[in-house]
Length: 152
Image (cartoon, rainbow, N blue to C red; front, side, top):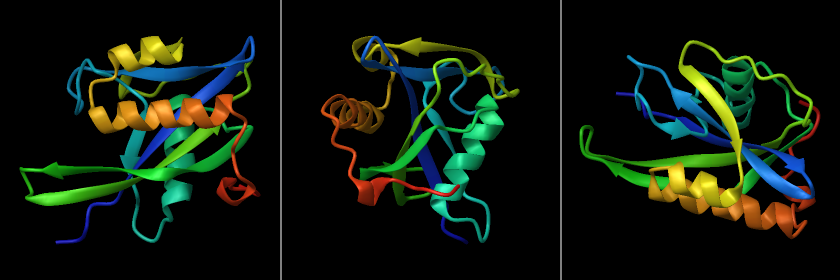
């Protein structure tokens, strides 16, 4: 069995000098039904993790980021159904505040949230931790050039 490869992506926009995080509510009949989530998805064969993150952003929202970077941490958890430890790279995407979001069928709605509200509605502990990390890096203006993914 091939290793399951997944990505997490934390989209945000800057509004009044503070990041607002884009969360999507999962549609009925889809995994994580009814949960508010950031963007996540599978990596296709022969696709890099970062290209999968960009593809998932485009598929789930219809937008391309202004700034795209790898978060210097991983989402890691144990999946009992497969008896596997999953290690998932995380990415962040700064979107233009004027972008129009076009959801695909996986989601029923979206909204922009402050860090505190986003932390209140995200369920998974590692995703909360990564969301807080992205917030801290963005608000301290410490996105290292090494993390930036350019020419996408």
